[in-house]
Length: 138
Image 1 (cartoon, rainbow, N blue to C red):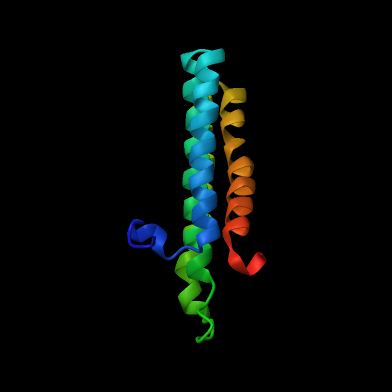
Image 2 (cartoon, rainbow, N blue to C red):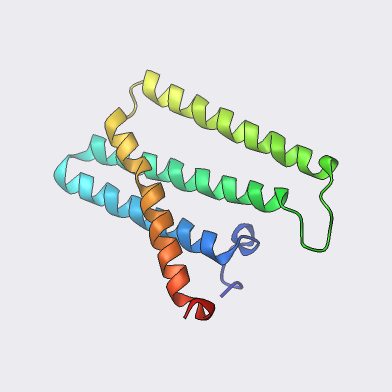
């Protein structure tokens, strides 16, 4: 299964990959549901919120994987500094993007927040699915 994954996902724990896939699927479902019920601008806002949630989860997972040392090596402050700065830059970029989207009225704010709902939904589904398929949890 890991051969079919892109290189950026191969290093992530399988539970995180399952959650990431579930977040994207939840965002698509929420976006299509809002398109059917609320119209295209709301659907675009919901889909954009879901996309931001998925990219945020992917970036956070990559940063955390890099910050945590391998079991065989000891953590060093020098090795964690770039990834700590990347985490701060990720948060700053997320806030700047949200500020830009809200001030330019590109999105409907409540629909964007509804799209963010894909994150907890996807994490819950991904964790549940991964735990159910794990033979150790039998």
